[in-house]
Structures are given as structure tokens and as C-alpha cells.
Image (tube, rainbow, N blue to C red; front, side):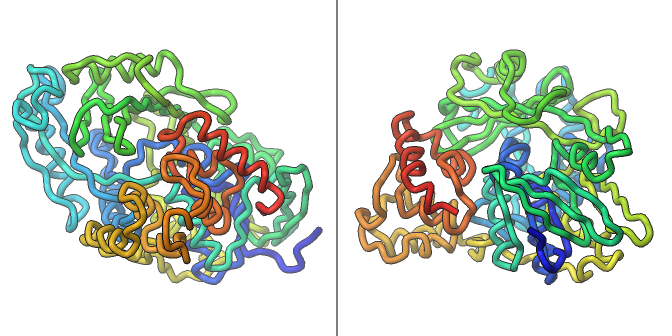
Length: 503
């Protein structure tokens, strides 16, 4: 079947870059189709360290533009989505024999001021022999520096961009793969193949190739006569342990190989530790942490923590690949994290813009830059609009989070406080829409465990492109971590029973 009128933009890839570009373009009035072969944020965009940050260590690689842009965006994003993004304090211990204290202080001073910080508190020096650090860290560690960055629920950030894109008129299709791309003069013809094997043909005036680890593969479909070897895939893995220490603060540990490893409070009951930097070749689907990476992470944090951990103590792990632009750097840690565009736009022919690299922190700016390029070709309107435009549920005062949660708890006093806090964190100002006409806990329908109810499942199916139990348990939330195997199976059974009604 042919769509009678071409889309202005076909966006291939439902990670953070694709979702951000679809949202920005739809908000400019463009006719947009976003297709993703799996669920939104199924791969790289849900396998991050979950930070909106400037990238402190990028200063060592002289990537000042990237760090400055990231730090400016950090506060912009915090204001756009204070329900899924919030401030954290990071403690960087000074360890003799590694980077000297003056260099750390200088780097953090630059980090504080290069991006025009307004909301977040500045760096300070801390004594590691006093609470809350005494007893957590090894006794040789005396002095450290505490600075600010932000946490982000990475997969929810992707989903909220896709939701906003759809609300602005974009056609968002998950489990729909772009299996063929043919340029016919000023129009692209694309074959979209759905999960059931059915295929359809759509046309578009331009293509944005935001396929992440598959960006070269998509380019190969569009331009089969050319060689496409622009990617360097770098694998990053994380371990999740039962809580390793009390407190809301995070640690950033220097490693002897000049890399760093984070330890971050996670989901209330756990500590998230990572990441690694390993060259990756092969199929980017279904990646797992290796025994070598698990040992590397544990060895790195055991240099600092008073109580050692071992890989078999982890209760969960995840891994992903970063689709970086291959700048021929000798070291996977130094290859640029900046984004790179490749625009193929011969005169009189439909353009394709391919995106390499990028960070969650700079996704909004990346989208603006991408659409600036396409606006010069007459594909979309030129006027940017996303700076300061909140994401769905994010219209909450960035300084008034506690007040918002308290107001919601008072309004729905029958809702367990832990559940209300989680709902507010996930859905922000849309929490009331989710609860709807329920007047007691029973009104939320069947409870599956960890506070997940049938009403919440139906809400995310209707609004957030959910098709399966894993979409709910691991990408729209991390409730899978808090549930037993039997409880997770019950959610899967619910989806199996209702599959016919899930479009």
C-alpha cells in the first residue's frame, strides 16, 4: 500500500536521537513517520549510566565544546523533565599516584563555570574520614571533591519524546523495521516490515538515519553501491548490586587505566556500578556483560570500597554498544563522544542524514542541529522551539518536587506512599490522568507486585506504545528488578490474554 502524500521526514530508529528529532520536526509542522524495529529505547538508549552530565573526563581530551554544550543542556533538560531528571552529588576521592589534587580541583572549577551553572550547587572539598564516607571507603582516602550532575531515567526520556512527537502529529511505529530504501529523484520509497511479517511501502521527502548501531546497515540499504564503515562500536556494561552503602550521594572512582567507574544509588534498594569501554564486533542485538567486564568493574571499585564485592554478588546486569563515529583513535576511551552528521544530498535528489555518536545529554541540541541542516534544504521549517518546552508530565517547578509529591499524596491518601512516589517520578503531572476515576486502591485493578496495577498497564499501552510485559517491566520502568519471577510471569500472562486488544 502507498501513502498518497509523502511524509516530509522518515526517521529510522527509536532511540533518543530518533525520538528527539521526530519530536522537534513534528513541532515545526512537518509530517513525520518514526519507525523502530523493536521497542523504543530497546538498545543503546536504555543501556546508559543514566546520567545527564557534562562528561568530566572529556575535559582531559580537550573536548571543550562538547562539555560546554552538555553542561548547558544539563540544566535545560532538568527544567524540561524534573520528574525523570533530578540532581545528584558525586564524590571524587583523591588517590595518591593518580591525578593530582590540584588538577582535579582545576577540572571541577572549569566544570562549574564553563556551562553557566544556575540551578545546581557548586563543587566543594569533602573529608572522606567523616560521615557519610567513613567506613564506606578505604582508610587511605582522606580528601575528595563533591560536585553536581543529574540522573535521568534514560528509556523514559526516549518514550516521552516519542509521546510528545505523536501528540504533535507524528506517526510513531514500533516493531516496524525499515527493510528497504530506494531513492527515486526527490522522493524516498521505503519498505516497512512489521513484526507479523506484513510489509507496506511509504514515501518521504527526506530520511534521517538514527539507527544507532545499525546506522551503517541502513546506509547500506539506501546506497548499496558504496562502502559504509563509519562506526566504531564500543561496548559499555554495568552491574547492579544490593545497596553497597547508605546515602543519596554517588562516587566517581579513578582507575589505573585512566578510565573512571561510577557507583550510584539505584531504584532505592540497589547500587549501580559501571561502565566499561570495550571494542565490539558482531550482532548488537541482545548483548550481555562478559566475565572479563564483570571482573574489571569489581576490581575497579574494590580499590576504593572498604568492603570488596565480587561479580557473583550482582543481582542484575545490562550492556549496550555506543555507536561512535570512528575517528581512528587508538583508544576506545578517547574516541570522540561528540556527534557527527553525514548528509547525502545530491542536487535534485532526496536527502538522507545519518547520525553517528551523540550522548543522551545533548540529544535535544543534536535534533536542532539536524533539523537546521534539513531546513536549509527546504524539508522542515527553520524555527527551533524545544528550548524550555517541557516534556509530557514535566510541567512541574524544578525547585518544588517535594511539594508536588506531598500534594499528590494528600489528594490520593489511599495510595501507598512508595507507589505514589514512583508514579510521580515516572509520570509527573500526568499521574492524575493515570489514576483517573479510581477512589481507592481496589479501583486500580489487579496488582501484580511492586505496586504495578492493571490501570497503570492500560495507561502505558494507551499512551506509551507498550506492546509487551518487558516494555513495562524493563523500559517504561525498572519494576522487573523489584518483582519475583512469578510476578513477572503473571504480567506476561496478562499480556498474552489481552494481546488481541493491544494495537
